[in-house]
Amino acid sequence: QVQLVESGGGLVQAGGSLRLSCAASGRTFSRSPMGWFRQAPGKEREFVARISWSGANTYYADSVKGRFTISRDNAKNTVYLQMTSLKPEDTAVYYCAADPASRLQYDYWGQGTQVTVSS
Image (cartoon, rainbow, N blue to C red; front, side, top):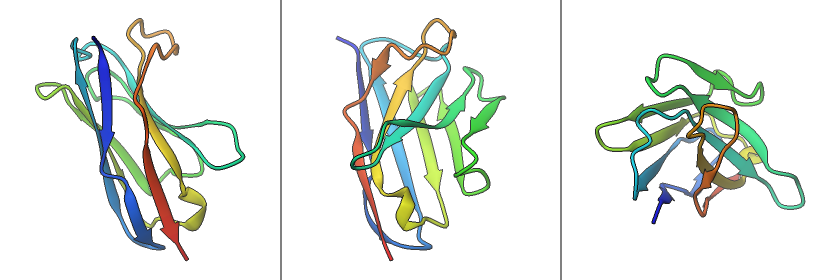
C-alpha cells in the first residue's frame, strides 16, 4: 500500500518558520517529481512547490517564492518544505503529492498537515 505521510505542521507566529516532511512508503518515488499543495478554509487547493526527481529543478508559486524551499532526500524517500517568514495567509492544510509519470499529474496524495500562522 502506497502512503505519503506529512508531518511538521503546527501553530507558529507570523515571521516564524516550520519544516514539513513527507515520507513515502510502499514504493519508491526517487524517480518521480514531487509537489506540495495547500488548501485554506473556503478556498480551493493550490500549488505551492514542485521538485524534480533529482532535486536539480524546483518551482514555486509566486506567493511563496523566496520564503519556501522544497528539497528531497531520495535515500530516505522523503520530501521537505522549509517555510520561513510565515504569514497568516499561509495558514492552510499542506499536502504532499507524487507525480510518478512526470506528467504534472499527481496520482498519490498524503492526508495533509495543518499549518496555522497567528498574527
